[in-house]
Image 1 (cartoon, rainbow over the protein chains, first blue to last red):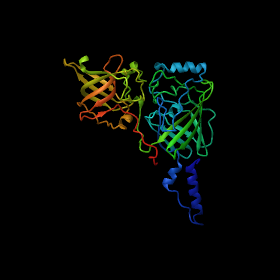
Image 2: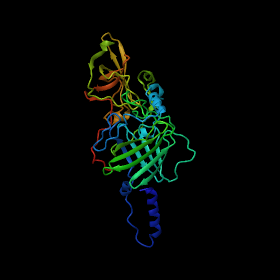
Image 3: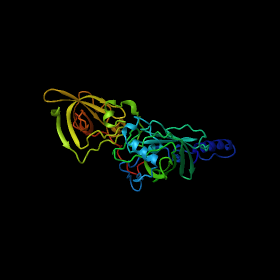
Image 4: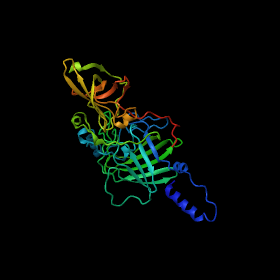
Length: 259
Length: 136
């Protein structure tokens, strides 16, 4: 599965070399080629933060009711609960990206050396590099961090480091929202020590994408948090634009947390 | 001003769910109250992060009040049947909103009756699709 495009091109080159010697093998049809790209497509989260239930058995793991927060994490969690601490239109981080709220789809595209994920409601894509070169030594912190992936059978194992710690709560609602729909919800911060290990696989005959996310963040949590989030393949949906700053209606922001 | 409010309905069980906010918290709106606005559309702002309907309501003394009515993002609206042309200036509508807690003429749309009599919500997730129907 790894690097299917390169394998495809390579097989084509071999076929050219040997074509003078014996009949070429049947060419891979576009549909067959597409079927190898298991993650490629448009997906929408099943379940939401408010209601994690998806179609059985694809229900998201709820965030823990008693998060193992460090003292720093506890302080940060309370800080994020104050809407004044949130910058309007600030990007989300990778955990939020992969959590979904059921309103906006993501699109995944598989290229030879990277897999690109675009969330409709988040300005920045995630790029998962599959070139096998590992993380750079001197990594500039970024909103999405640096992700590398490798295939273990049908599971894409993704390792992410290098986030900038500026993300709003990982369990916030929407790409640019500072708070959950219910303001009483506990905020789950992430620091610049965030280290994610994800196991992505497609199940349910290709219709459900499972992302098991293990959150390691020793600055924020005393032990890892593991969640499973599910997405449904939705080829009927077209990706649209979403730019938070288009019409922010600043006259309202001071009043109702329009951030 | 109060005369502009045709109806005030306590809504403890919201049959029309607010759009889950993609950008905002909707905490500033009083979700236990519904205000019915009968008026004419001044402008339909079809843009992100949320769409807005500006509705001019005239009370029995002839005073005009312009309400700002917040809806979901164009993404959420389009996937539930809305178009940027669904409303135009001058359209007479009846909108039910959750008003701001501070009393300003600003509300989150619950439902709106269009000139043709059809009723629409504030935008939402795309309609669900049963498993087994996706062929990619």
